[in-house]
Image 1 (cartoon, rainbow, N blue to C red):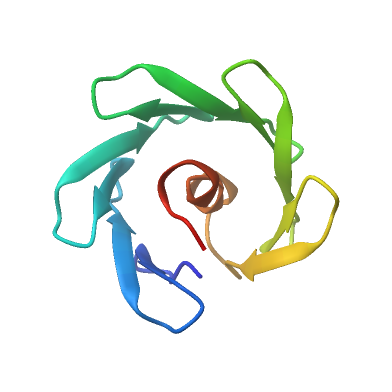
Image 2 (image 1 turned 45 degrees about the vertical axis):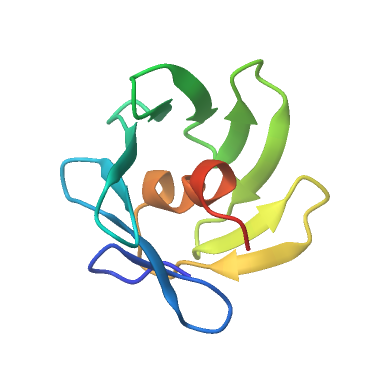
Length: 104
């Protein structure tokens, strides 16, 4: 789950990370682990591209293979369209980082 303030929580509501307004992704100890760019490019902490979020909500790995989907209502789905989380009201690009940096 991703809260509107950028706090990322697992299914037990334990905080596992954060997304800052500038797109910096942090682990639970506030160490930078990646970035989400305004164009939907997702990068690791050394700025290598690890994935993408398309405007339609499709989440892809660096080879453009589909990993999942972010629906307009904030529902996060795996590649088979099974619901795996929610980020209601949260920017779609923020929601996509869970596929790359956090294991739920």
